[in-house]
Image (cartoon, rainbow, N blue to C red; front, side, top):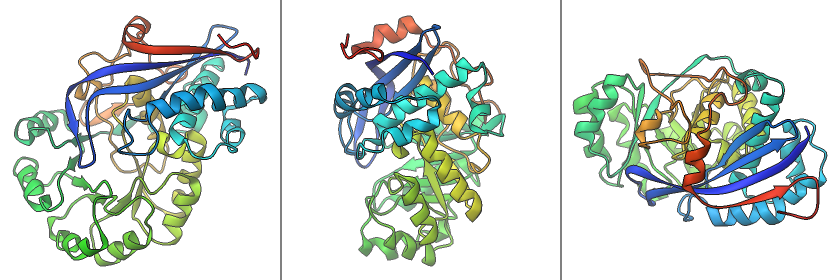
Amino acid sequence: MNIEEVTVRQVAMKLKQPFQTANGLVVTRDTLIIEVYDHNGHVGYGECVAFADPFYTPETTTTAWDMFKHFILPVIQKAQIDHPNQVHRTLSGIQGHQMAKAGIETAIWDLYAKQHNKPLKEIIGGTYNHVESGVVLSLTDDLTSQVKTYMKKGYKRYKLKLQKGQERETVEQAKEFLGDWPIMFDGNGIYEPEDMLHLTKLDDLNLHMIEQPFRQDDFYYHHQLKKEMNTRISLDESVTSEHDAFQAIELDAADTINVKLGRVGGYEVAKMIHEYAKVASMPLWCGGMLETGIGRAHNVILASLEQFKLPGDLSESERYWEHDIIKEPFKVKDGLVEVPSKPGIGVQVDQKRLEKLTVRQFDFDMKTTQQL
C-alpha cells in the first residue's frame, strides 16, 4: 500500500452544549485524528474515539497517544501491509487498546479505498445508500425543546440517557412529545442483579430497546433479563471482539448488538460480527462516541452493511458541533443520512480548521527507524 507517513494529532472541540451520562460529563471533546499518507499524496483519515477520562473504557486519549507512538505504529512499520484487512492480525500481539487500533485501521481502509478510487462503502460490501438516523439525548438536554426540533427532521429513534430510578418518569416525559416514535434508554452498565425486578416492571413502556443494563463483563444477567422481558435487550460495552459477539449470540444474552468501530477495534472485527449476526438473523445498529465528521463518516459507512437494520446513533453534525472539521457536514433529511459515495470515506476534511484545533501532534515516518 506504500504507506509513507502517519500523523497523529490530538484535537479539542467544544461541544455546543455539555453531554452528560450516568458515568461522565463531556464539555470539550478531546479526540485523536489519524492521517495516513502514501507516496502519491493520498491521505486516509481515521479517528481514535477514546475519551480524555476513563469513564467509558480504560482507554484514554493519553494511553492511545502512547500506544501509537511506542507500539502500534512501530509494529505496522515492520509489517508488510498490502490490504487493510491485514491490520487486525498484525496488531493482534498487542492486548486491548481497541480504540487506538481502530483509529489506525480505519485510516488505512480510507487510504486503500482512495488509492483504488472507490467509495469505502463499496470496498467493505455496504448495501444501503441511506441509513436511518437516531439521536441521543443526554442528562443535560432539554427534552421539551430538543425533541420537537429532532422530530421535524424525522429522526427515526430517540435514545435517552437517564438516572436509575427515574426511567419511567423520563420515558413518559419524552412520550408526551414523541408518542409512538421508537424510544430506548441506555443503562450504561449501572444496574445490579438486584435491579432485575425493577427493570422487568418497565416492560409496559413498550420501549424500542434497553441498552447495556448490566456491567461490561456480564452475559449471564443479560441472558436472564432477556428471558423475562418482551423489550429488546441490546449489548454495547460487553462486546469488544468477534468472540464476545459470538458468546452473546450463543448464550442468548441479547436481541441486538450496538457495534462501534472504536470499541471492537475497526472494520475487520465489525465485519466478522456482522457475519455472525447475519447467520443468527440478529439485527445490528451502529453506536456513536461524539465523533467528529471523520468518525461519523466511518460510522455511516459501517451502517451501510446489510445486517444494520435498526436506526443507529447517526445524527447530523450540527447535533454536537457549531463547526465540524469536514467541509460538508452530515445532514438528516426525512430521518435519513446519505452514505458517502465519493472515494474513501467520501468527505473533504477542512485541514485549516483541523490544524487550528490541534493541541499536539507527532509525525511517524514509516520508511525509516528515525522518527520525525
